[in-house]
Image 1: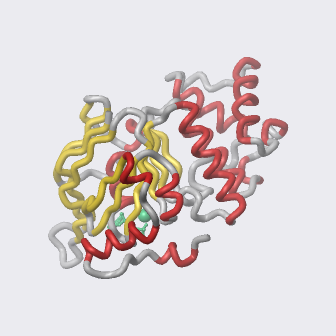
Image 2: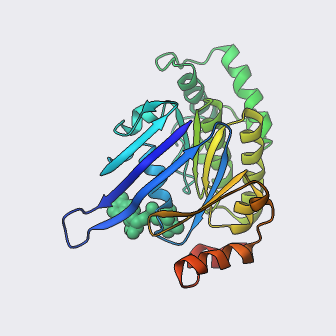
Image 3: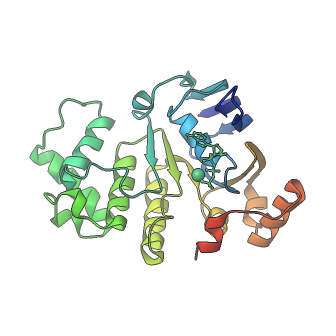
Length: 265
Ligand SMILES: Nc1ncnc2c1ncn2[C@@H]1O[C@H](COP(=O)(O)OP(=O)(O)OP(=O)(O)O)[C@@H](O)[C@H]1O
Ligand SMILES: [Mg+2]
């Protein structure tokens, strides 16, 4: 469903700061895959997700989504088929708009009704139903402005908005990293539920090795702009953090280095 061919992204090309963030990446993602992505700092994980989402142009290669070449599509165009949640809970929602207005926009996007985002009573009913699912009592606060919510509540809402739009593809970039441990656990549980319920093809970057092993059906490890491991099936079931770190060391020649691992629970 997603095919990435020879993808290369170079920042500051032709300057003394030239930096090859993605180096000839090849990846085929199957329909329904839930892929967790790990790697040291600067490995290219976010750049990979940003390239898929059309945040910036790439130097070389192709990205095909359901057979359609989306390599040079703008971020706005990609957003129609791709849901995203970032690390920063403030980034996925519109703070001055209410909970129901935010969700209404997301639902309209899925139905391609971009201009008709008015709130009919039917739509309100759907919004309430979705909010009940995340179990934070937000269904009783429809007209609360989103800026008044906590980080965890906002991230749950962002996740819901990204999934109600029934995206072909969901991209999660360390979306629980900025939350307190208890809230992070809740949001991870919600993530798994929403993905499984809707069978959404997902790429999830995480610094948490345990989550990367436990969640999803496939684990990718990146290093220095390349995919160094792609692990599925029994091999993934039998993984442990120790094994994974050892595998990294074998390829890389030194210990795995990700500052957020030290900080994580
Ligand atoms: N917008 C940008 N402009 C310039 N350089 C960038 C940009 N985004 C990423 N880079 C560089 O590309 C390389 C890969 O960065 P990227 O953010 O993809 O790493 P990452 O694997 O997500 O790391 P982390 O675990 O720290 O989030 C790094 O050297 C980074 O400095
Ligand atoms: Mg990153």
